[in-house]
Image: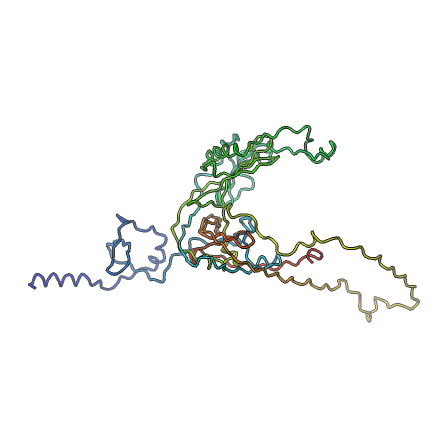
Length: 456
């Protein structure tokens, strides 16, 4: 090796000595999560360390920033308390709440449930546009004239804009600019007419508000097939695109309703749009949302078997889509009062003779030596019912997206499982690993003491 080689070798060795790391302000580390991640010129390429895994590396010209391995990414959001109740559903409620219904479910995983974890995408539902412009656009779709104005009940938490009168005297459109940006249309003049039962007299029809069968006009609501086509075009005009085949319908003598759910990644979610025509043939009401779906990345998920243990904790609840709704077990206590045979009449009570008035002097109630009659008689507290314990085996768990609400009123779609138990009803639970979202403090629900005579 010559002198030139020695010099090059020495320079390389000196270049590999990093020296002392610079002092960094704690703000640089704690605030790192708020700054955007650096973009590589070719994000698809990775630097492969000998014998190690592929790593995406960003070049820092000033020096190397080392973040302690104990620092982790903060939770995406804090789940709202009692999210299941807020969503208006009852297919999955914590066992603590079910104690109030005198039943405590004891869940266990069936032998067929998977033990493998995985990953799933998390989506944030973000308000899109301007509320006044949105109200004007929806009003134009339904032919409601007027200028958007703040509703009398609007407040900073739920700012609401309306086109039309608030008193329900004419068609109205409202847009609430929080959560998922709900919009609502209603036309009081399009209310359905109700046909009286044949046994109802003309005088009774006035009181009942129904129409006599011989005077009833034809049902002009669209057929279910027509409703799908009309709803598809109407919802598209409001900004929600859906295939007609994905619209579900329901029709009866009074109305026809068409409903479509937001689908993300092939999964129908609990967020829905709906239109109802009365039997007058006019749209009586419709509703929808104003959101865009933004991916927040992919995160780890627990196995279906491990997720079963979360069914006892309502904080892990999320609203499943229409494929997994309905059939919930609300009460486990027997409804004996409705089915029990009428009791046999008891014998007439025996009438005791009225006692003769006593000639003995009675004590003066004002005498201090005499204890006064208590103004309130002691009442024995009703015993707290012991909850009925019901063993439930979860046999089926299907991965899907669940709608969750955060503590600030925002909406999210998160991976979860829809779980089917032996009786055929569904329950849903979030499958994200611990730490991806923050849970609220658990709620303690006291048992409900039934009134006398309601429960045997």
